[in-house]
Image (tube, rainbow, N blue to C red; front, side):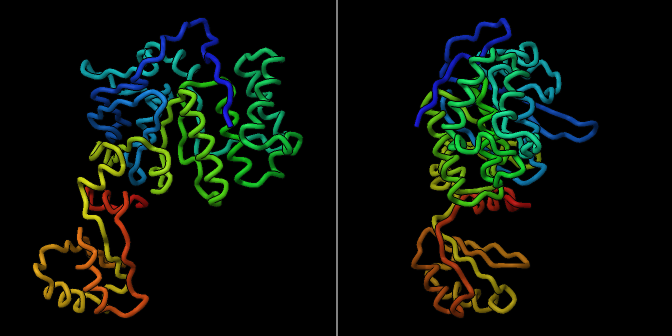
Length: 330
């Protein structure tokens, strides 16, 4: 299902023609008092593609995104430059906001109004002509499969429907850049897949997406590129599968009873030829054994009680743990 896209510039500025690079940030810094939230961050985002920011709370993800649509101002430094959709920040902040749709972590809907009324109020705030607003609202309700709920009050909607309504609201002005901050947290798999499908459709129409998420499958499903951040800095950037192939072993044996299993694991690893093919990470909750050869991990698993371990392929959370020593959910 496609949805018509129109120019989002309504404030007297003419948008530059579509450029293959939608966002380019160079040497971005951001301090809050003595706290440095972002340190010397540089990256580029391609038009019509999705870039996902991953990292634990406090890594600088949300602060970075806020500097890209004018909610926060980057520190003034001569080497810093931010260009979004052909406009320079902070000088052309209004033009960027006009072309940007935002899906925050909180829904911020008026629960006493119905679905159509929530969108109509937002359309008026964006100075949309009434006839165009009615047509656009109808398009978006169909796009997000909410047409049958148009007259329902927000407080009568499920969490998934409310989230779809927030995304519909962010698309009212036909943005060229869509920013999603944890868009599917707490939603069931069926709703998450519906939202993913709609986001893919938007990208096919040329919309650029910035995403923050703690869901590894969401990053894999949507992102053409990920940026892993920790303590305000970029630690890795690239296509998800390429990063996994280049920076971490292919398999991991996850052992859930570290106190009882530690000596057993040590003996089993020592019998491998060579034992150095297995990399070990210990925590109070589990032992993780990484290897590019699944047979080596299966040999260790045979020495463990049934149900005390899980052998799986590595994912982005494993990569983050290797890179920073921290879990993505910390």
